[in-house]
Amino acid sequence: MVGIPNDWLSTDLKGRPRSHAVVRDARETPAENNRRRHAQVCEINRAGRFAGAGDVPPPVLNRHTAMVATANAATGSFAVEMLDRSRDDAMPEVVARRALRAAA
Image 1: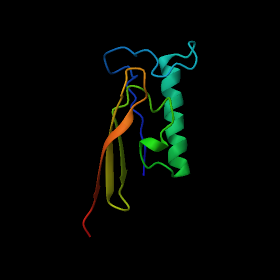
Image 2: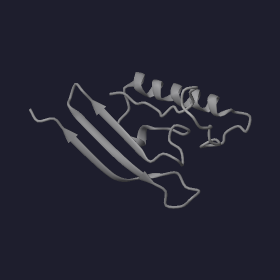
Image 3: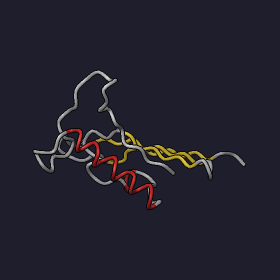
């Protein structure tokens, strides 16, 4: 199972970084926030404990998160969770989940 944070900060994509999804330190740049989120997801993957949104800590999970998907080629499983916020200042919560498993 592999988790991948989105990573839009690159020289070949037009646009600009948005402000911090979760402000922990006003001195942290968007690039540093991106690296920290990437490192957290790598650690979740190494620990083998990625099963969905409940396993995703801030700032990987942030108020802009709309979907979390998991896939496992070894078991033929795939799941996707859709997230939404009940209030503008709230963290998103799972509002729908669908799971598929390959036929034997």
